[in-house]
Image (spheres, rainbow, N blue to C red):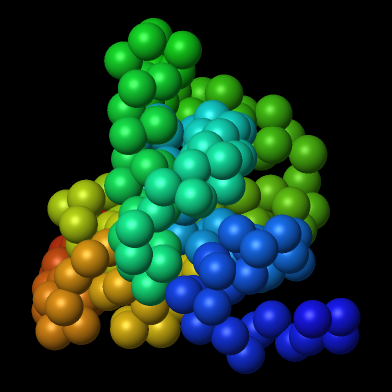
Length: 192
């Protein structure tokens, strides 16, 4: 498989090709799932750098354990489980502590003094994170996977081992919560 377009293959074929020694096949699996792994890691350990480390660790563990995967078509759910286990294990070992939003805001005060577009982006990101904090973990994960990582509902369902209808329901419920939250904020600003 010299000039193969790996994007055209399903997960099962990519796993088999990886097991046969084709590193570009595993690179494609990483490309497909890296964003989703980061979202799950962030939900458990908190900050971006820590989540990045967990994601790298989980992807490496998955690569080394690939021969143990019994159902190659279930790579996504298997990787999801590995990510959760690795993040929780590292969190329990005291290597990382979940960062509260307040602590994160205080640590980023310097960004506010820099001005320009970076500050606006940072402030917008903080507003988004604050809005997402009103969602349950299950809702927040599907929202981040769908809207920020641009994963289709089918792939989210596969990755989280959920039926597509459950993913759709969680997205709908999250939308309702966010709409109510935004409505309350707009009403409060109108009173000021």
